[in-house]
Amino acid sequence: MKVTLEQLYNGATKKMAITREVIDKKKGVRECRECDGRGVTVQVVRMGPMIQQMQTQCASCGGQGKTFQTSKQREVLEVGIQKGAPGDHKVVFREMADEHPDADAGDVVFVLKEQEHAEFKRKGADLFVERKISLVEALCGFQMELTHLDGRKLLIKTSPSEIVKPMAKGFQPLADTESSKTEWEEFEGFDCPGIDSVAEGATTDIDTLKKAVDTQLKRQGVEVGAFVVDSRKAYFKQCTREEVLAAKKPAKGKTLYVLADPNKNKEGRVLKAVKGEGMPTFKNPFITGNLFLILTIDFPETLTAESQAALSKLLPPPLNSPKAKEDDADVEVHALTDIDPVQSYNANKINMAASGDSAYDEDDDEGGGGGGGMRGPGGAQCQQQ
Image (cartoon, rainbow, N blue to C red; front, side):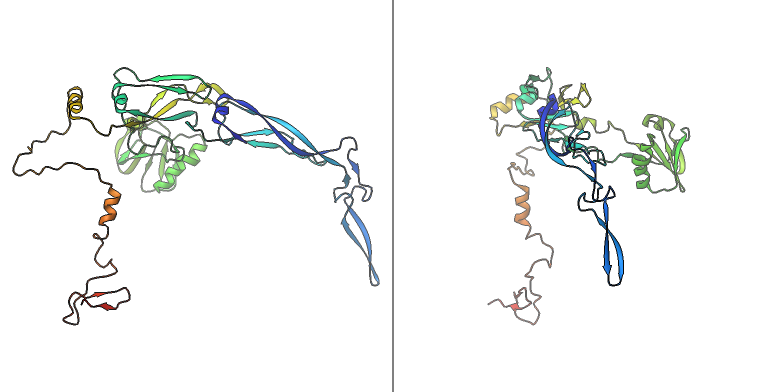
């Protein structure tokens, strides 16, 4: 069942019509008279001088031993869409499928299929909105208006003196983070003997041990913060990163693996956000996620010399201050220009091919005299006239 992001944010009810087979209650379910409820009939067959009895499925009841009549019944079900319901959430209506005299009716299951929104992107309980701002807004602050999924108008603004920086290179805030592997920090020649082991592994294969932490041990409720590997086996430790680092001691022949610092790349992941304006939490709508802004800075194409000079007085000093002067005899002055690197690579690719890659190699000048000859694809020599 298709649902919009607005319906998942605000909660909604959709009426869905189904048609199912129901037993005629007036006529009820009766025992089949033809087979006496056995579901099979016995036929006497003469084969030459021999007489055999053969069982066949009762044609009257179809082998069910009962006779009943069904009719198609149209039902209108009210499907409740809870606030914050995740994608592919199932709404189940018990025993609302086709009826059968010998079994309970099955269930009708609606699967919520979240439709893509034109403006908002959802990731768990968080919402993301892409916006473009100018350079002056990035440096001097901005205000922007946003209509939320419930129709409220939000006026979003930066704090005084705050500067908006470009998003970190390579960071994809909407990428799937659940499938990412746990990162570990390796300390060769170290152990943490002061922390008791909660489990042992009979292998020293690091990839297998890391996988065991994320699967077997986690399913058992063991949150491993480190493990130590020697020449024979591995020892898992249930502790925090801080506890491991405090208990870390040199140990010959052992390697200590500690959970990587979760805040290591935090600065490169931080985005501007409106706290508490994300999606309601499923089954607990009073707890909400956050609303993140994915901001792209639109730089001006050019600036006048006067504008550049005025900006230079207001902005911090440049990071590059060359000692060379333009009028020095051994200095070459070059002005930057815009060039497409893909086009540049393709333009020079033929010239950068390794020797022998070309279909037409230079002739080895064998056979005396015929200098400058080339060989074609079929090996025939093309003599230069």
